[in-house]
Image (cartoon, rainbow, N blue to C red; front, side, top):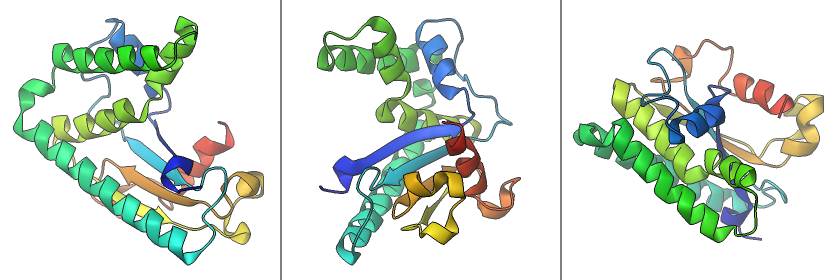
Length: 194
């Protein structure tokens, strides 16, 4: 199975970001729905179901990760140079268009299920990260890990993360700017309860 189709993206910080996106789309809150002082953390798991099992797949992940970081940087530059795209009306319209596309693609699902997919949609979550960094003019960085070996992982996460690769992105300049012992620590803490 190609690594791209066996990957998954999400935002794990702030922990309630999906609920905020849902409330934002419904008009209950406005943009920015993440505060300046809040740290945003995004993740990309590669080999989610089947692992990353050979040097060819590792190189494929590294290339995919490089392109992901480049696209994120491009999106941040675009939002920074066009501040009119960082307002509630424009952002809500874009999220709503994506919601309609998801609703068409998943006909037959209940509205609640569609809302969950929208709030966890990689396109919307990638936008969320880029918009936050651009709006507050924060720095950002990404770090890649793996493939993880069993001994590198907390016992409770070994089955889910062994032989997987992980790309983490944060809305700070580098790992030293994080309030954690390591950049992977908060992700593992979040993953343990999700």
